[in-house]
Amino acid sequence: MGFRKDFAWGAATSSYQIEGAAYEDGKGWNIWDVFCKEEGRIFSSHTGDIACDHYHRFREDVEIMKSLGMKAYRFSINWARILPMGEGKVNEKGIMFYSDLIDALLEGGIEPFITLYHWELPYELYKKGGWMNEDMVTWFGEYAALVSERFSDRVTHFFTLNEPQCFVGLGFLEGVHAPGVTAPVRDTFTMSHIALKAHGMAVKQLREHAKQDIFVGYAPTGTMSYPDSDKPEDIEAARLHLFSLPDDLSQWTWNVSWWSDPVVFGEYPEEGLKKYREYLPTITKDDMKLISQPIDSYAQNIYNGHRIRMGADGKPEMVKRYDGFPKTALDWPVTPECLYWGPKFLYDRYQLPIYITENGLSCHDTVSVDGQVHDPNRIDFLYRYLKCLKQAAEDGSDIKGYFQWSLMDNFEWHSGYAERFGLVYVDYHTQKRIIKDSGYWYKKLIESNGDILI
Ligand code: GCO
Image (cartoon, rainbow, N blue to C red; front, side):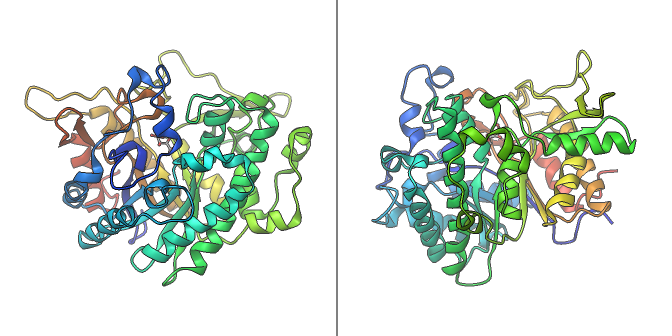
């Protein structure tokens, strides 16, 4: 029992958060390159211009992954690095970078998992309307075709969109992420529909241009729900809560089913079609067919969850967290149960093999007098969470892999470099990497295929 023998133990990153080299070798700009330049947008006006300088140091980073025994690595491609205008002319130097990275990973026995879109919208496409423009479906498809054409001889795992909840919600409703727009609610529903169609087109194009059999998935996020007790009514309440949709329009993107039901079932959830009726674009049968191209796995980024019980009125209700509830440096609650119930509910509903494409925490990591980085809180967090994931696997959910967020400390969006999420510490002045205690712990965990979780 425990995890499957071929479990993909890995870590994840994204291009803007680690690569740097923002203006090198013919790369085009993306919306983050523009957004971060604006005073006051990001903590302390940090930018991803240099980040972890991974563009120049990727070999060292692959060596670190190898030394930790990682089996898989999830990274994203910076769209404008390979297509500076977002479409049309290919930048061969950008292609070469990813090609060399892939070769280095494979030589190190590490399986590459490519994410097509971790929010790196080329600025040239944004100027043409970005996610508001129907042509995004074609542009994203062409980009996917190029990625497949050039890399699928060696890469067999692809994810299309990362966390559409965030790039629409934080980017266009709250405006705290690039491009920093607060758009009308109606526009955000249009964008979500176009993004889902772009996902479907990418699935098609990836497969059509693949050089061998490939596995395609999608990586949304969501706060999970877990039951207050083992009583069937509480379990049912948690399940209902997980797939329900917010009433508050300013928060509407924070849900699972609006983003995942169309992809897996080819239908938007009835509850949302009613609730959001006045704000929806035209949705056709052909759209839904495109959106629901068959995928091979269901991926989900999971960080925490709400404790839910069945209320006296027969509706799910949230249980208040007790005073002093455990939290991470970013004040996110520590709720290991979400890695048991989340995958279980998702597997029950979508019936697709599951990847946890992100999970992790930021800690107040510093270099100690002995030159090492001791992060007992991260080890404790991962132990608790992964024990729950193991239990979910043992109880029958088909879980294929887990990607810790993140391989190394990096640019944490509007928090800049203030938050440290890595298994590896990065000194941003010298670019020196120090494997944290949690990195060494993760190595042992991988070696035992999770058996040390008792
Ligand atoms: C994502 C995530 C990451 C974050 C991580 C910590 O979209 O995949 O936002 O990029 O860095 O979740 O907040």
